[in-house]
Length: 277
Ligand code: ARG
Image 1 (cartoon, rainbow, N blue to C red):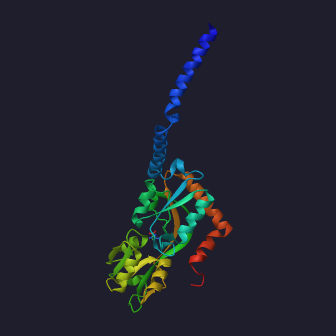
Image 2 (tube, rainbow, N blue to C red):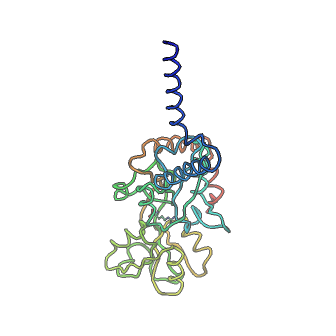
């Protein structure tokens, strides 16, 4: 009697457990569609929340950038290359993750990072208190400056002479923010720094305010322009990370520190910027 009860009980347990894992164990199409559903479910989670729980070992690390900013990020054929792209790749390697780069408008990067569409923003991005309301910044990895580009024969010789002038900037950059404060200046905002430089060449504007390293590249690539000696500001670049992602912030800072210690960071920079410039 007892035995019978036990086997009955066992049978019940079996039926229940089969039902529980039934859909997963179904053979054929039902099983396939389940695994498809599972994998597309994961994809959705990744898209919505590129960071969060998924950013563990072996996950992907999504970098938001604006690849119009040589030598930090720019297009070379189909590829996005530059100092930031290589730093991001080195960080991903340190963390055992796969780097994915998302190219977008510069003024979309903070939103992409704070909204979880990207894990981190690397875009020659200056640490700035307003931005810090929306994202956290890693330790800094480069010093930078806003400089002034003018035509070779320009009467503008320094920052004080920008008052009342037409100044071109890349939309949403610190150059945009500073130009805004220049007395009586008319600020022309372009989607790309290069477009501002072309406008200068065509005499549509009087000067361009932009970061020092891209300024050097743009002046070298375009006839008749020069960078003024005196910079407008001094700034530092860091990596933007979502406010709620302290885990990644810590990991990125650790990886950055190790890239600084090993000399790898200097090596990357030296590949794109020659010291004797
Ligand atoms: N450093 C400046 C800023 O943070 C300009 C950065 C522009 N970067 C770019 N990838 N377009 O506003």
